[in-house]
Amino acid sequence: MVPEIALTPQLISIFTSRYGDKVAVFHSALSLGQRMDEWQRIKDGKALVAIGTRSAIFAPFDDLGLVIIDEEQEHTYKSEKTPRFHTRDLAKFRIAESKGLLCLASATPSVESFTKAKEGKYSLYKLSSRYGNAVLPEVYTVDMREELANGNKSPLSVLLYEELKETLKAKKQAILLLNRRGHNTYISCPVCSNVESCPNCNISLTYHSANNRLMCHYCGYSKINDSVCSECGSENMKFSGIGTQRAEEELKLLFPDARVLRLDADSTMTKDSYQSYLSAFANGEYDILLGTQMVAKGLDFPNVTLVGVLGADSASYSEDYRSFERTFSLLTQVVGRAGRGSVRGKAIIQTSNPDSNIIEHAKNQDYDTFYSEEILTRRLTVYPPFCDICLISSQSQNRGFAENLINNVFNNIKALIEKDYSGIKVIILGPSPSAIAKVNNRYRYRMIIKCKNNKEFREMLKKALDIKAQGDASVWVDFNPATLI
Image 1 (cartoon, rainbow, N blue to C red):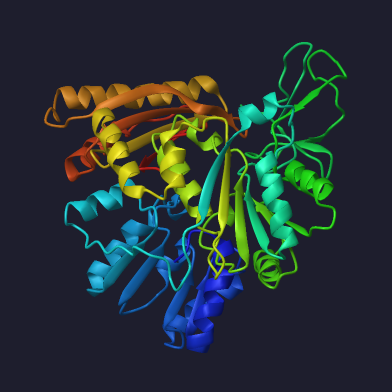
Image 2: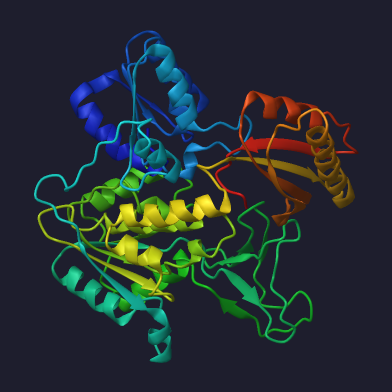
């Protein structure tokens, strides 16, 4: 199992070269007919290996002997739609039922999994060196504040520019990570300070130069960019923030002879686009691969000797308790894309906070030190693995209905714990508006409960949720969600 569709073509090629047509494939890019064909091949015993994203956990093997979850820490293994399951939990259940083996593989395991390994609940095996003769790359950090002070307004630092030039001269390849798609991340008015936002969601619109439109990455709303402020009518709009489209334009200006491939959600909408693009890069048809997090993990290109991270800080400034873990994982993973062949690679991390412990640990590929600091923070603030997180959310097109519903659930929980369930220990945060309070014209409220997910708590929760909602208001529950945002 792999966390991204982008990783399946490479893995399928390796497995089919050895096992031929005994390999089945499962992921969301397949049509319903294709999925049914793969499902039937397994039922008929014609396929003995299933490869895919989280849906592959449902492959109908009667006697499941082995499940390997690669990059097990990735949040994409958690389904955020009904049914809200985590692939790792289902894998544990299926393997226990068939008495098989579950292998969780990662260079940056989740804090929860590594804690279980440290406690002896999982067996821990470490690979202390790279496969073959490959060695870890040299890693450098660049303070982008100094670059700006020196008059460099380009998304590329002077060091990264020079290293890219040397890489192209040597006929090698480079991977650049920028985890924001679009051209500019927001547009604001310098006259009235208005930020152009989605009318359906509490989120700023992103400018996409390919179609000259402002787009919402949550509900899909878009409008033509007329460079006029929707509040005061000023025509002097300011474009801020850099996305992959803008970075692609800069690369083509700086290196006109270089062949640049942009890989993000906008460039991979068509069927088989992942496979065709990655195959083309592997065959040397492109010199620079620029993309979002889909280029950061699992890919193996021996000719890549340089990795650059444009804007390493954005993921750290999040209210989610996993933000440091995700930042460390993303940086560590993308740095590992360099120098996987016979030539030692280099990685350059551009940041506005070069003194960050997270960046320093990722630079040194030092998971153990990162874990020792992160687990202490989790213990002090009481977050997993020292508790479970129960996220209760309400939503409605009517703000009052959504707010009343979450408040009623809170009052029920409070009353039940004070009377019939006094033995349950919880920490409740909220109720409050969600971090993004409106999505697709539906207002959202939430309540975060730090608890122990056991039978007694679930029984209490079921009673607390026995409420008649107003209008179109609805409530849902998610245990240990991928994100609290």
